[in-house]
Image (cartoon, rainbow, N blue to C red; front, side, top):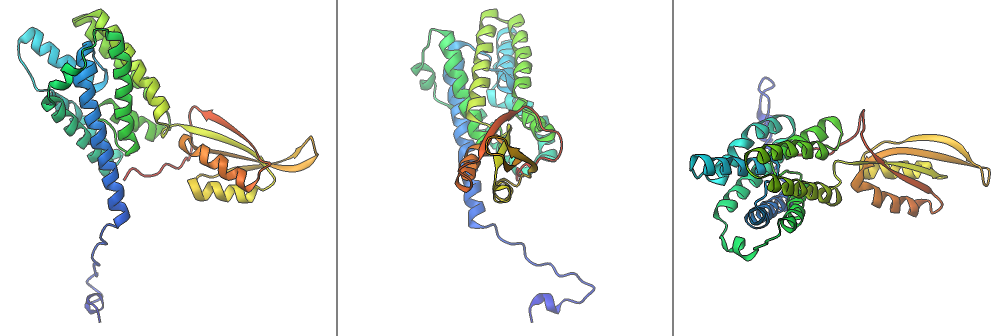
Length: 310
């Protein structure tokens, strides 16, 4: 007789919690590695392209640099980059911890911590290696590196903190791509930078942020959706493929193919943007004659499955 059988009926038996599986541990290790890589790349970018071009990147990173510049220039006080960055991220981190997910938020906080420390401690050798005298080049290539750093975090189901917390919150709760709204908010920060410091540096910083937004839209599609319109003679097999692989549903419409006057079924389904390619290939394996129309979806209202962050 085991311990649970020896308990009386009035005392509930508590079984020991299952140990985390090896697969989940490896997955968490991969997520952590991606976050650390993203933080390192972002710190390197700040200490090279951003400083070389005198840019204000936008977001909480740009706001941090703006605050540091203000204290240095007007109050003659030198503040550590990490301290200001950490203080700005406290409130959005608490909100995401409560509403989005604990592990997601903790990984994002790890990114902020590592980025802040490396930005302060990274050898100035990196800054001296890249001495660009053209701020336009700094803005373009710095924006691309910034997008790469953010994408690494997003691939790990985390963020780079700050306004990315806000973007993920909007995307999760409203099913809408929020990066363009974040870009507009960043432009407001740059207007403040232009009024306090230099107009040309603020304009170059807008190019930096635009390059980040465009590159990010190319690197990462996790918060975008695609609409699939599939005309097929094998609707049941294709529907089960969509349901089993993506956990999304589909709606069937009966029709007639006018060329051969054959009965056809139109399947309508909305999936994540990073799922459409492998689905299209798998559908063609089931029905080589299937006609597939893939459309970009601007926004989804209603029940749309999203994998949990934790």
